[in-house]
Length: 314
Image (cartoon, rainbow, N blue to C red; front, side, top):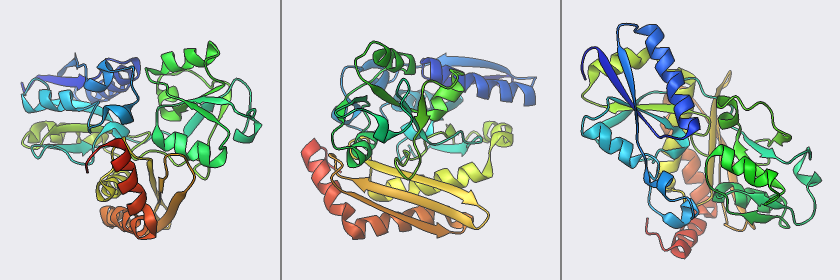
């Protein structure tokens, strides 16, 4: 990189830009001598809005083009929502910084209902996430799941227009967009476990670019890094992608590292869930242990069946 210029790659959505502007502001405060430029990049996931992500297939739908720009030297840094980042990265790239994580929970926008049980029989719930739909159907088999894609504003508008009675969104996105607290409620982790990396940002750079890595180090939050690395090791062991209902949430507590994870049938008829504990310095081993426990409990059969039905090879 030019010693005085730092180019940050980002998707062009309002949420992605808000996240990237926050990172830009932090870097500018720490390194006022650097000129920072934002480079908007359109990804495959941004272009295809009329199909659920699970049907598009593949991994890295929201990051591949950004990673290509990093590899080509067109940008020096990428800001990602960690839930969009595949478990496998190109060998020349690495995630060097994980800023303080936002709330990892999901938020159900309902227009007034305060619990899942309050929603009417047969309520239409908008989400294109297989993880969310499987857990919702496990709790309320009567729900009608409506595939709903697009940015946060688009999905909120669909509910306002009466397309559905409720919409599930990540709490972190609502907070980062400063949208206030819409009518609805946070869903507890006991009812709906979050996606791997949900609420966390990751800064991706070239492994060889030591100058950039050193300049960004001040932004790293160790507890967030520990949790996300455990979750990503869990996802990698399960060989998971957007075609399967997988959830994982780790956190550093006074007693050490705690992680919950699950694999679900697409229709929510069965959920295999477990919790493990470990030492933070062995975060990735904790994530792999949890994955192995789920696989041994029958998650391997669920994953094989789901991949076969989706026509996606592992």
